Amino acid sequence: MKGQTATRASPPIGSEEELRERQSLLGEKEAVRGVLFNAVLEVARAEGGTAAVQDCLEASGEKKFLDFFSYPGGRFLEVLYTAARLRSGSHEDFEQALRRLGQQAAENFLVSTAGRTLRVLVQNNPHRLLNSLPWAVQVGIGGVEVSMRRTSPWSGILTVRRDFCPRPFVEGGFLATLQAAGVTNAQVRSWPAGPATTEYELAWQ
Image 1 (cartoon, rainbow, N blue to C red):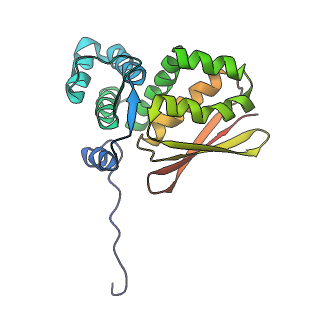
Image 2 (cartoon, rainbow, N blue to C red; image 1 turned 90 degrees about the vertical axis):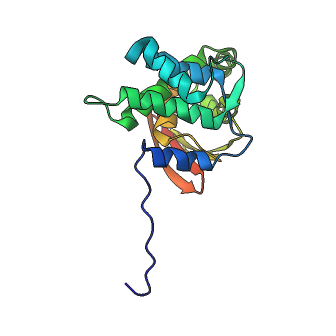
């Protein structure tokens, strides 16, 4: 109709178009630690064996990932989406697969040197965890900007700028981190807050 401007619908998450659109937002600084790549490969191996791992490696153009090295964010998205597509099927959709991959990534990070440092600092205190999460995110994913604000005695919001990871993956990672810190009734939800900016609300009871 005259006077109205049509808006293009966002491509469905998990589609090739959505992946390429997400990759187009990346700059040169966005990078991901190898420990997170290897967590994704671990889930892929459990789902589809060596063949699934090989599919993920071929998508990335790498032969292996070293835990403490950083690799381009675009390659991580290639591995992540390949693994999520392998997992998704009759019992699990693409977003559920991303959450499971995020949980595994957090579990692997928490047993790394940086993750063990985080757990010592936090000492199962959710308030300390909220304060430390911006540092932890930036250790695992370079190039992003993370800030935190308290919203109640039992919740806080992390704002992630230059956020290129799909929200279900990050939600799964935060939930696993809260649970590892002994937080009960943990909940994580998220929403877009601007171009390449996401807010993640972490809450507990």
